[in-house]
Length: 307
Image (cartoon, rainbow, N blue to C red; front, side, top):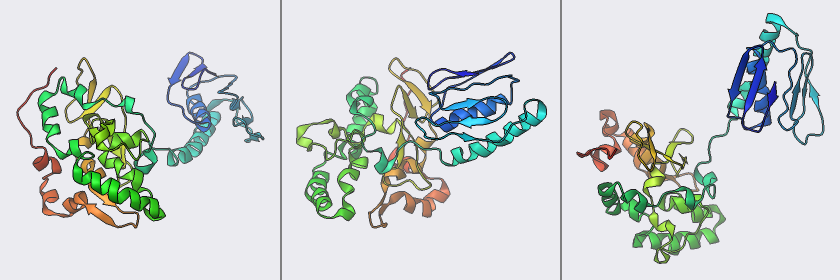
């Protein structure tokens, strides 16, 4: 069994070949090795992703990259059902901690500076095909979340000076932009230029930001804890379609009130909700009746797909 590169595994044993393309940590190399070994009968196994793991019938020798020591596990059975059972148990035992510690994409404060402006389409690009929807967006507060004069005063004249004086609220200097200028936040451009400078922060809550969101961290949506996955695929409320410019994929999340809650629930640095629009809805009669945010704020209208 050999490994080539950091994202491809080819395992050979008798006539079976398996490929796996999502590997992120040295620990996963070993687990995948053991897991797939259940399906083959190799006489000798060698797994060498950057010299991190070596396995032969008999003892397992584990060497992490740049580690100072080698750890050995007990002698393995060398063939037949006992060997497969042992490997199966060992794979399960080793894999459980990895599942528990699997890292989610960065969300909330952790997403600051993890993307770039270039990964997100400008709204004007969307306008070239989605003319009516673009016009609706320009008339909505989503397009003015950063540029509206009241928001400019609240951020630059109140939030930023306060954040620079009080360490307890220092995070709002960047964090306000997670909902008011999210692409600037993701690009690490905080504080963003003032609206008069006409930077990309002026896009406010843009088309591509919302249509690249795939879910949220934790149990409660709040404080911009959404996940974003920029790229050719755009996530929306219709089944997957293809256009000359991008692909689309159905997202149940974008149709749910929890999508709105990622910014319309806000907890202060003192652990108190200062805005709980989604949580209030959740406790009220409309949630029980199945009336979602979208029902009133994004009512359906006649239209058709462009492609």
